[in-house]
Image 1 (tube, rainbow, N blue to C red):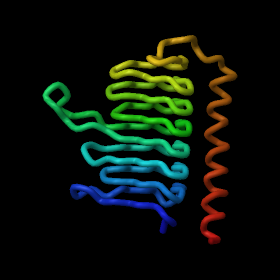
Image 2 (tube, one colour):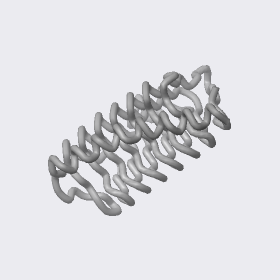
Image 3 (cartoon, rainbow, N blue to C red):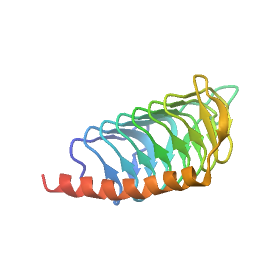
Length: 184
């Protein structure tokens, strides 16, 4: 079904991948993972849900080399930290998302890290290279930058529109890559 992709059931949970999703070669998808319609998971990503769950909503794209994980329950967090990614999100190359929530239309830049308990609200952006330390909340339409990340400013309507258009471009590109790979 998927060329050169590792899909591993773990602890009785198997990844659930919508048939319209594009999963690129080299990806590793393990455990309690749910991938929605028209999602694109690009080359050499790792999505490991061995100690909690990972949900990726419709039309989200996860770019090359990204790692998505979650964290197990402990005395301070009985439910642990699942990773819940909403619809129409953009996650840049080599990002790390760990035990966090991304609301619809959230943006995580290239090589950014988003840690346990973080929330990126709708249209919020964590800029390239930023480190969002545990339990931070990026407000609706805000841009955070730096290591550790701090609020910089609100995104303009044009920037939000550009991010939303990026989702449309990645859906089309994912379909093109999927078709190209089916021909091999």
